[in-house]
Image (cartoon, helix red, strand yellow):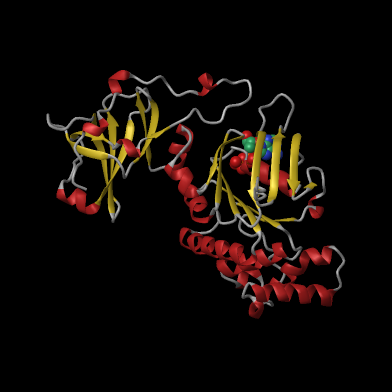
Length: 373
Ligand code: ADP
């Protein structure tokens, strides 16, 4: 039998990693397992408080793990000091020293290690050249644009020659325009340098734009791991579908499903259009598309809100108004069955299952005639 090709080596492998800040409190990170491929861009994504930063800080060595292991290549780095891990951290809003030049900011950690001035300046200048900032080495952060500051921060993180760069919400302090520019740069640098980046963000849009691998977390657990395309098009649970946005969660007799709001069909509520009855509650013009907010006539408590995204031309051809009664449907091929999501050991799937489906909500999905889109 031919040998199977060895899987690509993981830059970081996390095994049953747990962090409990105080005895008797719920774990901030609860026995998670994760492999981060070498040379990949990995985003840890989830709402505030789900354990992303704690996970990153444990990888960095800034937070002690309560139990479990962190491996880098063949080394177990769980209890190593931060400086011996081969990782470097880039913080929110770059955290550059305002009174130091770009060159001295980049050279700072070498100074702390006792490297002689000429040598540390040579290495810092090399790195600044590499991120196209060599000509501005003498400037202080206040004399640089946000984008230039990000490059200095990147050079400063790279001076210790890390294998893995850890980024904790590095773009969250920037204005929206700069944030989009800077994320494109981060992605470009990651590919050019061939390093592994692990980037924490609460923005699904940022994670989708950057990640090779997205890790969606909730309550200290991992809900789903996959490519942005895979996670967006096949959300594993109600939590992921709602958190990623752009999906409706619908409760059918066969169980809960997710349908993208641009895959929904909508028709005026007359006798010839079967489907789920709903009422339009909101009409938002968004340029290339119109977003309709609706309330289903029947749904589990608190779950009646849905949305439909119509291309501008389709809306113009048949506009809908607030208060209008409609029928909603979808093609079977666009329905994604949802699982119960991540559950803690000892908590059965029943505990995390969504409310039982109501047979009255059975959508006659395929029977709904396609509306002109
Ligand atoms: P995220 O980065 O996803 O916003 P965190 O990892 O910062 O989440 O926090 C996860 C959980 O751990 C939260 O409930 C938070 O309140 C708690 N937590 C974080 N840091 C500390 C700390 N130093 N001491 C006690 N609890 C903490």
